Image (tube, rainbow, N blue to C red; front, side, top):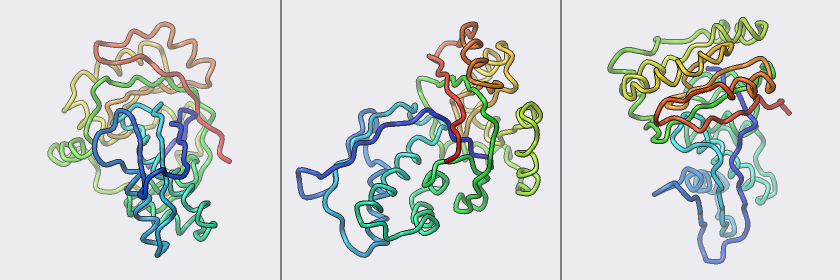
Length: 255
């Protein structure tokens, strides 16, 4: 899979906890948080407990939207925990710990565009064009597990992907790369939430290079040559009921 890293990001504040255990504070996310799981896995790998930490997460990435926000937060917590522990783990070891937390977490340990294979644990950083994007989130969200189950039911996913073919496609000129992008989970997401088809139609009416579902959905995106084109396009966008407001962002530059 190709993972594109964008400028949209949550804000995490990490400091000492006032009580004797870790605290994860994230408005809008009920129950256990993947950031807490990341701390637990880090401590297990370290072989000792860290000082109790308070992690405050201000969500800017829509929740349950197929944008990897939770995975990015978990990876940020792993990086912060590693710094507080005195940098005991190099990048590849951190990624192996991240793989125990979730399939999308390893790619976020060092935020960058990436070709990701295996079950998310094999990460090869690549270069992608400086596209602009219009994101069209849905008010409700979709369960990733439900989308994968539906993909299995309707046989939406191909048996395997050829990493060499994906790597070659990533090197194509921006217009060719965009026009050839596919998402095996798109049919499954539409099957569960048919309104997604209308959101894609609305985006295509703004003449992007392509419009697709991101990840397991339900967020849709339009891909444009640059941020200026995306900003201009959103002015004519008419989101269907349940979708929006649109978010304009851009591909971040690898560092």
